[in-house]
Picture 1: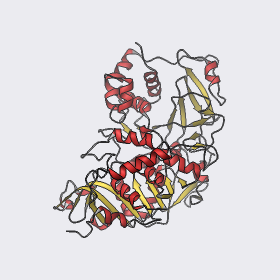
Picture 2: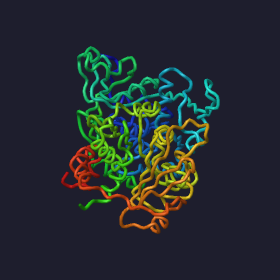
Picture 3: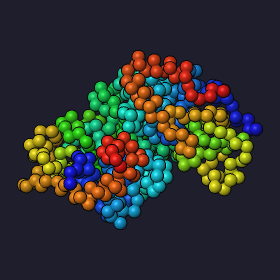
Length: 273
Length: 242
């Protein structure tokens, strides 16, 4: 058995106050780990949403766990704006680092290559660029009169996500979510919750191997069935639309958000083993 | 044949898309997504429609990076943007209203706009609300600029703006919208009253073509079942029996 297999509680303790935590937006959101972090009372996180965020960042912000959000957008999609994010930005309770989707990817790709910065087209003339003192405009060194933006590498302390399957050797099957490799390569540490842990080596299956994050990058795996609930995990379960809608309504104001949070703490669907 | 406003907008937007090889559709875009699917149904040159959020082949994307890399290389021909505010220079505001960062109203954020607006040749702006609070003289925050200085690398930019009242084309040299047509049942006065920026008006303003029976049948039979995958609520609202 690989030593990286831990309990959810042990995993959550590896994430510390002030950590820069990177989260991918789709089909892999570690909701149960997020709820555990809230219960643990974690503070001052710097969240990087790849490239955007939805319910989990909104919840963490509402619960007072976040100091900074680096994002291209936080929204509940068809369920509307992210209310706790909106009110926290408005009040100045959190620092906002607005980006654009490919800038988040590019910054992480720079980190996975060990580069200090990376150029990106676009952005010039936007107020997004104007408000990011860490984004710079340089002259293309290979062509005259071609200004181009350079972005610093984004190197998070921790990448967290939920996936369907890991093996006892510490490899994680990430299905179609290829971006999970980028965030894990860029982060110092990667912590993964999964629906199941199998006893064969996934990397030895030619059909699965291309969609595997190798154990080398994985620092912790916890067995957490329903770990993405109420969000979806393809091949396992669909969105629980009524629960997301209930959240969207509750998050509209601080007192109903607090009530909602308390209900969550007492009736979470995951197995907090 | 009777049609809904959504069907008119879908058919109107599709007119800009026939013959393009790769049309990509971002988040919260059921009407543009339907228009892209209609264009693909009617035009063999449309090889690929990518819809963010679709789980069905062949519409799904190979991850988020794929879309931006494609656009960077010029492999995306059309994309769609909306905005909480859009101004007469086609600047788009997806970020919020008031002084940044502690804005009175904070929306989601710029998403891919600050990049894709520069790189995709034909960006179609759309908004289902045509009012002075949306179409403002100057946006509060430029999430993505409509025009750039000549030395800025910019193969892409605004091409048209489609609303429930009318459609505009954007003139990148004059940096101005030009009224292309007004939808049936609406007037130039109504467009002026509800638009906070100046735009050019032709001597005779055409009425937007209403969708033919053939197009409406394609929308209802071919487009509706596909757009229902990423946008079930939209499809149920527009076509309860799809």
